Length: 173
Image (cartoon, rainbow, N blue to C red; front, side, top):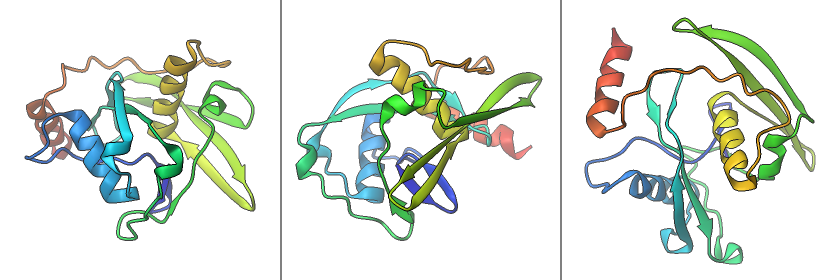
């Protein structure tokens, strides 16, 4: 996970013209932001698409490190303040979690907040990052979280680069 501009997030960003697919975008962005060598990663899945608060389609890509000891994080200080890891299973437990109800585009949904303490550092993982990690943990561990997710159900079109552009254009109006 990365800590940038006051918020915790996962490495990632917008697709660029040379990216072959979502996995290529994720690998390129992870290398740029945290120095993750793509040769150490086996992409295992792309998860369901999420809609960000800025109406951008986000496609989480899950990969496995072949050798965690070979990964030596390199912080891109122009994009990231800090790099840290969190146990994935934490996002299935009701411990250290709070939530609040919100509404967007006529849909009620729950915003989850997870507090994680590592050493003398305290991190708050919430919003889209928390939703993605809840879903990823559910897939990896093969079970739902110990709490109601409260997701909104937007009718997202099938993701394409054109669709992403269309949603970004809609967000400007």
